[in-house]
Image: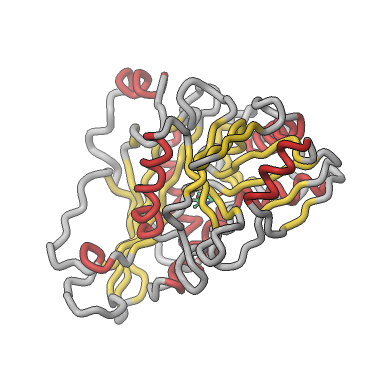
Amino acid sequence: MPEFALEPNAAPLDANERAGLLADPGFGRVFTDHMATIRYSADRGWHSAKIVARGPVSVDPATAVLHYAQEIFEGLKAYALDDGGIAMFRPDANAARFQASARRMAMAELPADLFVESCRQLVLADRDWIPAVDGGALYLRPFMIASEVFLGVKPASEYLYCVLASSVGAYWKGGARAISLWVSHDYTRAAPGGTGEAKCGGNYATSLIAQQDAIARGHDQVVFLDAVERRWIEELGGMNIFFVHADGSLVTPPLGGTILPGITRMSLIQLARDAGLTVREEPYALDQWRADAESGALIESFACGTAAVVTPIGRVSGPDYDFTIGDGGTGQTTARLLAGLSDLQRGRAPDPHGWLRRIA
Ligand SMILES: Cc1ncc(COP(=O)(O)O)c(C=O)c1O
């Protein structure tokens, strides 16, 4: 593995100014003093690993990513633990997903140990940027772009990998509450054979109009149906989804190539099973969701992801329907899974599967 050259920021933000930003960081607006970068070229492989001052990246206007969107990214968090330590949550799973995304986009695969080490080094360099606020964490954003300067349509032979760190608080403004969803019947997110299971920027570019539509109609998030039958629930713009039935069992849509394999999703399936709950990965139809919510056969639904952790869903609407889940608030199973996962991530609960990667 190449050594990381440390080139500390010569003008880090003043501690008082940093404290001001960390008091109410919001999500994705406050950035730390450093970033990690690694370059790839077909002839040299991975090289020039560095931790440097965060700053603009200058690119030639003919850089491939600007034209054909060969780009992938990840999202994971580092947490301050109660004992003063710091840990990342399942960075190896993000490293594996980053490699899978790279394969799908015909990009160079970053070795998993380099991915984890780049995140670890960045967190160590910017450890003072983890906000102490409720729900606070350092959100890490590894990403990779095709950096070759060439206008031919082909996989690039040069890549720039970079990791940013952003100090974040709770994802939802105004604190945790049940969200309302708009079911998109006009737009789909991913088709079989497409890029739905890859974490590539293009998936998000095409989902924005649907999310904008949901917001314009007064909802928090969009939920997508499958592209073939327009019948099965897939996921939200940036979160997976679970359904909780009155018999205590959970259902979540299966990974079939069109859904992002969420690490929160995978972790919650395990935690729920550890707690003795039945979890089925099986298709669930919109009509069934509505009928089950109305009959009381379904009592809770929640969305999950690194950013928003576990978020209850209170209401679901479409062009000519509107239904409430349970009493429209946070259900018991949702609350229990949220507490279980958050406690584990912050080192307040046992970690039987070894998901926390301690770095300090
Ligand atoms: C489309 C989509 N689905 C699901 C998720 C949840 O994935 P994870 O739990 O790994 O954050 C995300 C967030 O990364 C996402 O962008």
